[in-house]
Image (cartoon, rainbow, N blue to C red; front, side, top):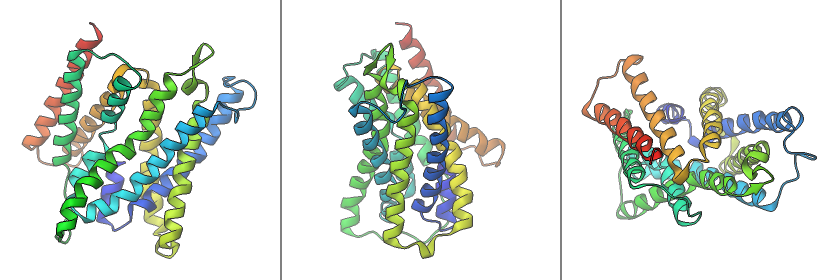
Length: 293
């Protein structure tokens, strides 16, 4: 997903065009998954569209968070460097961890807290290591210096709403399982559906005449692969306490990006590259030690 948005910036394809294709692709995919879960797996019983109100409320909240994230990417990049924007979008585990501990009263050990700190450092360092494509220098006004940190905070919160919704629904029982497990197909379909509709409305406001169909389909298709795989992974690991599962997923993603950049694209190993791997190993080790206590 990060590659798709970075290439979109290089090719001058707006982030909302890439996201619209990715979200609608995910929406269609999870519509099929909804009926697969209902007919093949037998979950949920009865009408797959019937679900308790928390499923609808928290799912729509997460979907609107995706729309807000997409709407904030381009304005944030116009007011400052793109690396912090990239970091803010990938700090989804931090608000989820705070919500899990503060609201859901989940317990994490001191060692696992240190693992979260290492994961935070991994994200920040990996963001600094991202390639910067040549572009015109950003001219920043005094208002931009004030707004840019607010945009970054907004990106972190909005991109985290879906993971917070996962944690909340994972904590709510549904028979012998949880609301998230029982209504997973509906949750995923609604999340992508709300995101796709919201992004479509943004494009309608800005005008479809500038929609770059071929490039948007290419980049959006790659983004969809990453997004669908990432969301399914997030759902599987959302039961881990304190947002630890989300932090582990982020670490795995950054290590993969770092290895591909060096092994396939032959990028130079920088101090930031080595520090990313060190912090990733440290974070995973601390999480593993914490699970044994």
